[in-house]
Length: 229
Image (cartoon, rainbow, N blue to C red; front, side, top):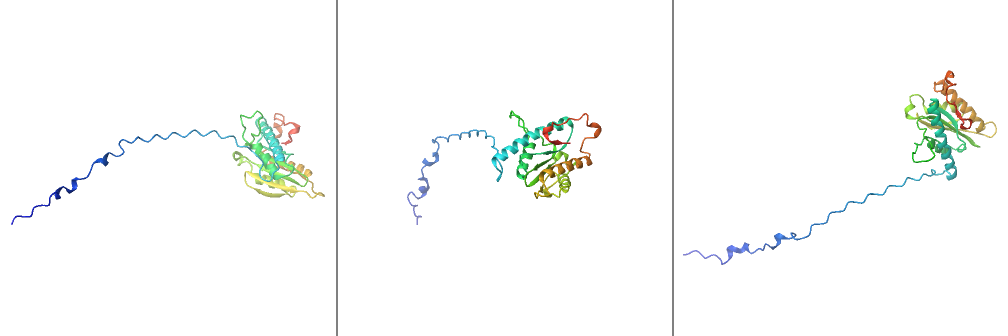
């Protein structure tokens, strides 16, 4: 018996597919290049302002005095060769927050774009004192480059002991304290003079004060600078 004939067309069942889809997208336009982002505009100089809780007018006065004192101390250090100073600040009025503003302004880096130079004494060790009606505020600062010569907390503690003052906080580079007056036997204005003298005495004991035979050649600050040697 002859074998059955194959089904008509059964061997071509897979050849009916079209090739129309293999060229999809060839004629589509290429995507446009992403434009480069525009350069960001220069940021304006940050506007300074008083810290929380500090009166704006008092802050402005403290910054002005501190900046001026910084220039004086920097000049004194350059001309006289001194590295540590004790000086008074009037605008802080015995307030530690305002005295910190004075210190920051005195240590601020010089801005070459400013017509009137302010600050610039960041490499000068200093103790600032400010008396008010109720208390005397004190703050010591020692630049990192001079930390092997002087410890801010040790310096301030010795000064505070002369008036039974309170050491608030500090480390080797910065320290703050106060002497509270009672209006009867303790007066901040008098304590300021006592503490200032003690500070100079301590600096002498650490050989951080000019020698007697160098006094004639050393630069002398103006009377109104209130800078103690």
